[in-house]
Image (cartoon, rainbow, N blue to C red):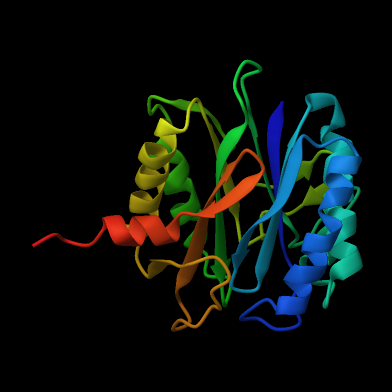
Length: 240
């Protein structure tokens, strides 16, 4: 089994996602479960980017990926990132973001999903995302983490996107619920250690000075989505 996560800018503006856009996508999420996904959810809404994630058996990965892209297409206010998808690597453009990670067969599927948004395609977002991957790699309790960002990517069942894709998605799978906080904490710390990078709550518009990156972090567990920015904000307060 794997987690697959696909992110796209399909909003009618460059700053936020409308309530109607996210609501319409939520209504279509059950189609993924009907098509064989173990569970699926709209896990992240970050600036003008939306991420749909699903737990899926390996043999259904291509089918579910295609269904996710169809949901994004059907609800798009602007074709945006979807236009960059190509059947051939040489014609691929700036497109949707993709991440996948393995889940051990004897584990209940739990995962951490990070989504990044830039206003002007700030190139350092690649380093931010990759620092999160580096931070989680090797931590006890990690099952698997997605490939690093920054190269042309073949998305199973969908096609190719180029390395110009600038709003990456990162996913990590965990062995047990006690590992969620440790691994997410390491990833959040790595991201926030980068210049001009800010943790935001799920659904926050990209109201930052251009030249900045925002990111959201969700725990996707037992079919439920937990916005981890809220508990980590509380944990980060200095006790007096």
